[in-house]
Image 1 (cartoon, rainbow, N blue to C red):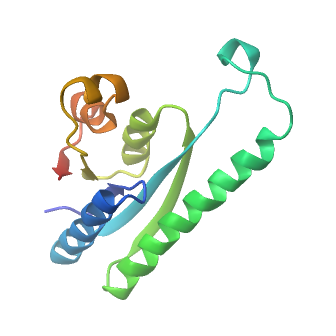
Image 2 (tube, rainbow, N blue to C red; image 1 turned 90 degrees about the vertical axis):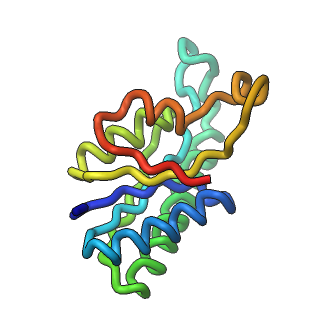
Length: 145
């Protein structure tokens, strides 16, 4: 049914459950898995809300390295389960949009991700990347809680 599945992870305990489910689903369908995370990009210009003082470059590099380590670990788990996996890191301040774009560029047929299930004011204040993906993606999205 699915040939390529993108699983979005942020390394949280809840997203780890989504990763495990995605690996199982990929194994069941004989699908390739794309492990994806976003290294949040800080605003880089004065017009974006901050000035770059040079120290930010080290922080950005560390974020990218941590993100790569996260998806590489997912890839290793997938390979250990007999699932072909490609580890991919996005670098953006718009996490949900980066997930959607990555899924489309990778020709994924399904996006798997977790939802923290925040409700009320917490959801309004923190926003919901999952909600944004659900409402803006043209691909099917499997949300796990």
